Length: 414
Ligand code: PMP
Image (cartoon, rainbow, N blue to C red):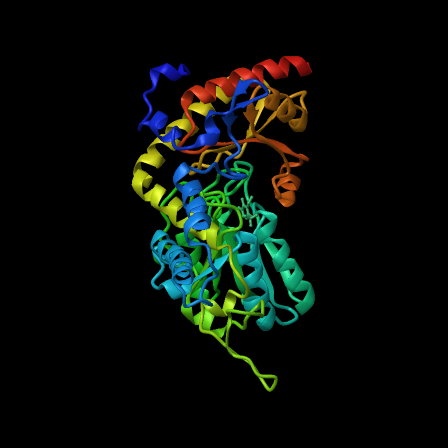
């Protein structure tokens, strides 16, 4: 079953790959196998061209200019807000705050939503499998307010213990957080069930969607959460783009986090009034070209369709998992029943970093390290894992090349 030629790709992956200029380059004289998509995705020419076009044809600042270029730049930027609102099915474009990424979005909620309302004795609930971006901002505001951060446990397979999470939603918890998909394990968390439990207890829920949006359609209304954060660079868009979606009631109540231009209604030394959300949270000149690229990225997903993406990625995950399981001494970390195509693993007798370095010389880009998830590494009692994270533009043949390279470099280390 482990011959890639026996399995037909679910869609025309070669045609899709032709849209990604970087995928055809060589690394160390070998064809690139890019399996570091959970770190950042590659960009299709449609996104690259949208950024290029912005600077060549439309460059101006947003909202401040009445001239034609200013209007074009503003419409590109605001167009990305519309595109993102549709992408996650937000009830209103005014609930979409454009940010530089997930880290910015979580910190915005931490400092603007959580910090003003946290009191000593309060708690924020997160999980052991979170990226540091969904842990450290909560610790920072907890330290300032006398609150604490609690973490719900997972099991050895890398699945969240949902019952424990729900039991931990005690009255002192003022905000609950969970990642939609783990960047290390690939685990998909049952966000709807968690959101239902949070709503019953009147606890707002923040979901980190960084690793979900590249792989699956997201509907924030169906999920039933309060906050949903996204980073652009993992979903084909330029770096320095992202989003906080939050329910209107929260955005209305939240004070601004950054102050400056664009976010005000009137500034007087006797007192400044602020713009309505989302602009209240968007001080300063944003990444306009980046958001022009973001709109193109969302278009790209729409053209491909998540049904086709999901079928192809499921085939990749199944095949890659089966091929890796054939390797003696290889241990996969993260075997949840519901997984996106992210495979963390360890190989007996070899350091993850040495393997990643040698794989790079074979043209294979994977990530080694703690993946900004120290508590998860502590849970598994390992300092690092090797992680192969796949995207819809990867192929079964690349999986074969990756496994062949892994077997070759492993010999070098033995
Ligand atoms: N959360 C998760 C689950 C992630 O994978 C990442 C990026 N590795 C982040 C948050 C942080 O995203 P960014 O650095 O783009 O803000």
